[in-house]
Image (cartoon, rainbow, N blue to C red; front, side):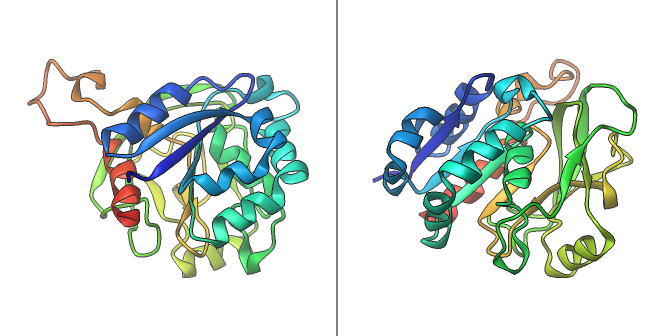
Length: 247
């Protein structure tokens, strides 16, 4: 049986279809589930091996990006989510999903504490940034990262700057949890230590600001007609690495 993926959506989510498609490309079975259905039956999570929280503008990003959905997860689904993670489930939060994971306390969860220990705030530029960036991952801990090869991915956010205390940053650094960083001078938002993504101590819960689901085919790239063709987009490698772990 292929691994089953729950792609969680709420009002304002707009990358759920692309995220589900990314998982099907690497052999998984993806299903889009509305947050209200999961709140009605939290035990539904037991049928899945992967939970994906896609990008978009959940609940219009009222108050702050991802805050409302984060509060919903923390107050209504906390126990079900922690059970899912503890039994070996994989979680990815992309852009708005990363903001949700951090603000709900599911990342980085230092010392196992499910409380907010970092944040994603306004870009240093003070404006919404929509561009392509380069990133380099550290595969030692995070199961979503296949290798340390530099990849190119699109970003699209106004609140993508990762911020934490120096004590938290140093602990994450030493533990290998600062697992994805902007490279080649493309840290556009001013993130501390050029962080583009982090994982929890297990390496199974991963959040990142770039959008791997938006670069699945070479034709998604703005220079696809001017450069040598590639068999696939760089974003596929993140989904493949995770599903390979499960298989």
